[in-house]
Image (cartoon, rainbow, N blue to C red; front, side, top):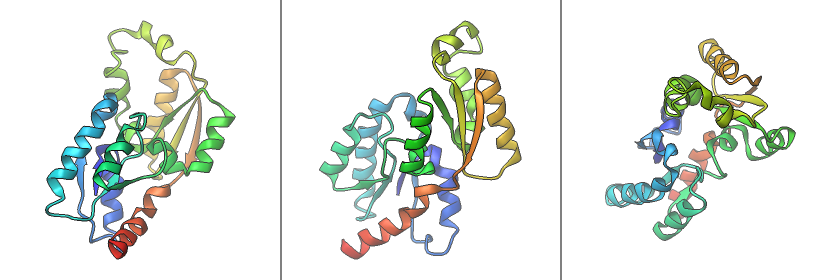
Length: 195
């Protein structure tokens, strides 16, 4: 499995469950999300690197802002990926995520990974720590923050609440667990049977 680094902790946890032990994991850096145009070719390079060792590969990325370019690479390489546009829909489930987006289009989403790394990935990477006047420019059209919680961690819940407070957004928690990510094992076993 070639995965986004933002999913590493969840996939490692799933690999400890019965029936997942056959999966080998290689993660690409999570900060590729800041440059989604780089994701397709980085995935292609990983596929070509690992295919001689592992003829059955699966990509644990959604589209992740590549605008369909990742799907084009995966079609050329004959590899499947997670469903959906992004990990938010993967964790919440496609229908639940669509409902959340319909309820409030101005929603900023956090996963456990983003709650854990909010300071580095949002505040510091957008330079909000040194230029707080940019906050309304970046987040002025958002109305709420939805924390899609994969775990029941009180520490992450507190971090997510702090992120909402920092951004000045209404806060909501939706407990998703691993959502559709937990179904990847079924897809991979089907690939092996059919491949």
